[in-house]
Image (cartoon, rainbow, N blue to C red):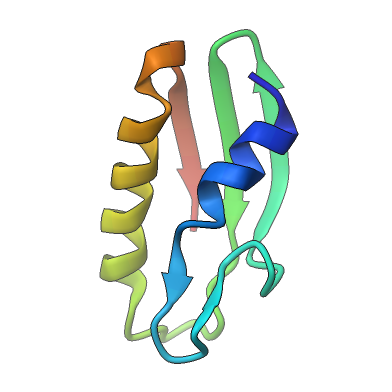
Length: 77
């Protein structure tokens, strides 16, 4: 598992208001890959982001895409 593979998977998560993926928008930061453990920070567009719950569900979906690598995620919002 590499940072590039994580970013590629996260490019499938779109901000519904801005119509761009969260990687392109610079919302994914501090990616750390240590064996099968992955952590990163998801920076929301505003502190009162109305789509926070949507983003959390999308992250869960991405995690399922990467399950074949037995990846453990830690996401900070």
